[in-house]
Image (tube, rainbow, N blue to C red; front, side, top):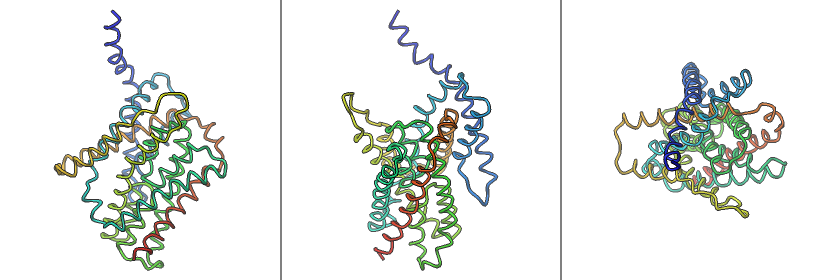
Amino acid sequence: MNREETRGAPQSRIPASLPGLALCAAISVAAYGLSRTQSYFPISPMMFAIVIAIGFGATFGAPEWAKAGQTFTLKRLLRLAIVLLGFQLTAADVGVLGVKAVVVILGALVLTFFFTRWFGTLIGVDRGLSELIGSGTAICGASAIVATNSVTRAPQEDVVYSLATITFFGTLAMFILPALYGPLGLTAVEYGLWAGGSIHEVAQVVAAGFIAGQHEGETAMIAKLVRVAAMAPMILWLGAARPRGDGPAPPIPWFVVGFAAVILLNSVIDPPLWFRQWAQFVTIFLLTMALAALGLGADLRKLRMKGPRPLAVGAVATLFVTLTMLGGIWLIR
C-alpha cells in the first residue's frame, strides 16, 4: 500500500501543476506579443513577462491554485531551458574571436563578478543580491540571474530586483555604446567585442551591435556567446563555494553540467537549422515562463524595502564591466 502511494505521488503533482503552468504560459504568450511590437526599442519577452506577472499579482494577489505550477516551472522547466540554451553555442563560435579577445572577455567577466560582490558588501547590500546583480552584469542578463539563483537560493524579491536593475542599465548601455563608437576610434571588431562583452541582454547586444553595422553585430553576438558559455563553470563554482555549515553539501547543479554537455554535442553533430531555431524558441519561451512564475510570487512591499543601494550596485557594475572591456580591448591592440 505504501509502495503504491509512493509511486503515485509524483504523478499526482502533474495535474496539480497544470493551472499554474497554464497561467505562466498565458503570460508568456502575452509577453511575446508585446515584444513583437517593439521594433525600434527591443525588449526581451522575459522582461515583459515579469512585469505582467508582477502586475497580475499586485492586482489579484498570488493565486493559491497557481503555486504548484509556479514551483514546477522554476524547478523543472527553468533547468530544461538552461540545458537547451547550449544548442545556441559551439566551440567554433569561441574560436572565431581569437585567444586574446576571449581572454579579455573572460577576464572582464570574472573581475566584474567579484568587484560587484565586493562593492555590494561595501555599501550594505546582501551578498546574495549582489551575486545576482554581478552574474547578470558579468555573464548574460536574465538567464544568468535565474541560473545563479538555483544555487544561491535568494528570495524571489532579490531576483526580481536584480532583473529590473539589469534591464534598466543594459538598456542605457544599448544606447550609449553606439554613440561612443566613433569618438573612441574603435574598429568594427573592437566595437563588436566591446558591445558583446559589456551589454547585459542578448536583445540589447543585437540592437547595439547591428545598429553600427553587420560586421560589428556579428562580432558582438559571438562575444556575447562566449559570456553565455562561461555560465556553466561560474554556476558550478558558486554551488561548490556555498557555505556548508553543519548541513549536507550543496547538490551539484546537474542542469549546468547538461548545458555544458549540450554545447559539446552541438559542436560535434552540427544539428540542422530548423532544429536550432526550434531549440532557441523553446528555450526563450521556457525562460519567459520561469520569469512569469517569479513575478507572480514577488511581493512589491519587500521590493520597496530594498531601497536604492542595489540600484547603485547595478550602476557601478555596469560602468565597471564597460570600462574593463574597453581597457582590455585597447591593451590587445
